[in-house]
Structure formats: structure tokens, C-alpha cells
Amino acid sequence: MTLDGIGAGTLWLAVALLLGLAELLIPGVFLIFLAIAAAITGVATLALADLPLAAQLASFAIWSGVTVLIGRRWYRDYPVATTDPLLNDRAARLIGEIVTVEQAIDAGGGRVRVADGVWPARGPDSAVGARMRVIEVDRGVLVIEPLP
Image 1 (cartoon, rainbow, N blue to C red):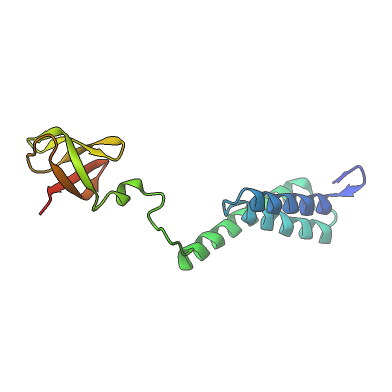
Image 2 (cartoon, rainbow, N blue to C red; image 1 turned 90 degrees about the horizontal axis):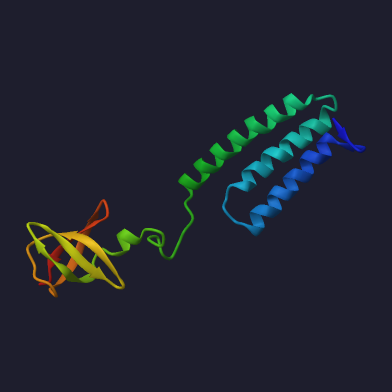
């Protein structure tokens, strides 16, 4: 397969380069695996000049799957260290927070104010304005207890 004199292998390598650059510009730790698959397909296409398009696409698909699986395994075995492991887990960040009862907790349920928002809560009966501590988050409902 050629396009205006450019070989298919060269096109695959160009795609690999573009995917690698896209990973640098928009980091997401995913496009790099596709870039590796495109590079392998490009090298294979350069080595086997008569490789049909269907085989090239199959090679890219297979190598994409293989590199993504290797990447998943790598990141599972060697997780990226972070200074804030709860950065994207807003609910978990609420554990230990002091909240104010906004709607009286009656029969185990009510609402509490957390910063500038109001969350459903369950816990012991409490009057409006009582200050409580979050001890757990259960499917979007804050489980609270009275302050000591």
C-alpha cells in the first residue's frame, strides 16, 4: 500500500509519532500504547513490503491489545506515587470532616451542610445546627456521629 510514493510502513511510523506526541500534549497514559502498536506495525510493514492492508490493521489491533494489557499490568504492579491519593475521590475526602445538620436527622435520615453543599446523611437523631463528624460514606449518603 502506498500513498503518493510514501510506503505504508512509513505511514504507520508517522502515526506512531503523532500518537506519541499526542500523549505528551494530552497525557492520559493510553495513547502511548497505541503508538507502540503503530510502531510495531510500521516496522513489520517495512520488513514485509507486500503485507496487505487487512493484515496491517489486524497487526495494529492485536498489538494494541497486547500493549494495553502490558501497560495495565505494569501500572498495577508499579502504581504511580501521589501526594494526594484521594484527589479524585471526593466522598472519601469527607471522612473525618465536621459537618452541620441542615435538616434534622430524624428516624436515621436527614441532610448536612459540607462546605458549600448539602449532602444526605444518616446517623443518630440530631437537631438543626448540631455539629457532627463524618465516619463513612455509603453510596453517596454520609454516615455521621456526634462529636465527643
